Length: 527
Image (cartoon, rainbow, N blue to C red; front, side, top):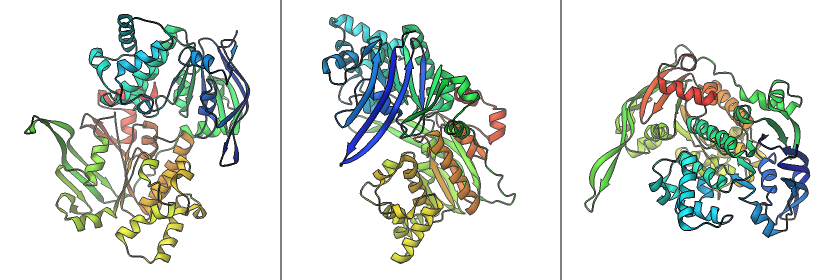
């Protein structure tokens, strides 16, 4: 069988500031007609670079050697005219974050139209009908409104569906999907994967699927190539690789999928945080006088508690109110009801009292690169809280920074580096170190592992468990990743549209969920 995509002896290197960097080293693989091949590996393994090289999208800084053929035709990295016909015609891409791929200044219709007109000569009426048909195929509703909408007016799942519509617009022979579901919650993720499978079958496409999520690989891939440090260390039929992995690195990746749950909390643990009927409603204004015509009910009557040494997991789809709870608990947004922390009603605290309280209640966000100042060194970022809340000498501060960096698995020798000089996992360790240096009683973790690959997720989960056991920390762990929630949480809140629909012990909810919505979440995660 003639492969749709063939890669032979591919080498890719970059030169930056006079330093030679080899990204991909002598890899070979192929994707046959109608087949899905998955490229898996940690961040930095060369997956995305390999994919981009197939359509010569790496730019002038890259040196590419080897032979890439698509449908029997060799890709000439220097023939721009041929490459233009290739891109979006024979080969199409779907990227991880559609918001950065879509033009924020153009409507959805204009962007779809431009994609079609690059490869097809259609009149205005046929063009518009094609746009409508494409949106119907990818499951977009209220199409007339969506065509006129801008990317920011769509949800994350809708934007990804638009990207898929653009990718299939010209009936490509191979679709390259680079982490297309990473930023989506489990139910939307399941919908997107099912959609891709249906479209692949309908159009007879082949697919190269890049991901770090092995659960997805097992679900959709016919064959898998495992990458590490720019090399393919193992490849074969998916079931064979999963059941009988040969390479040690593959075994490590598979091990990282399954993590045991947390240790039981001490029987005498006291409640450190209690929320009673907490509500966050955002008013909707209209007219010149800005009259309130309604409310967006982000959080409704949330009642729960957290004990010392306990992890409370919060799960739900995007928009369910998970992050709203986090912001309310930190009193970063206004709320109604009562939130009691360490015996004090935080809603009644004055500014000075609130500042003191925040040294005991810290938060770690989803995107460490966005939450760390690019202008501050690692040491400055970690010590910032000490300067705000305590009065240690400069010498004592540096000792504390060194200690906490050791604690989270970072080399203190790197403390004068800036965030961009660290990997994603290392940046998240810096964010954790910044929270831990103040020795808090509770840490709120808002999607702290969602942007990380599985092996790094595994490392962060182990680190958080170690810190919890050592210091008796309480965690509120917010995530849409049910595998991580199960590994971390003693109890779980399941949220839907601002309401807590289920509250119970982790294993009980996973074993016998009471609510239909919870069952749907678990089904989507395991499908």
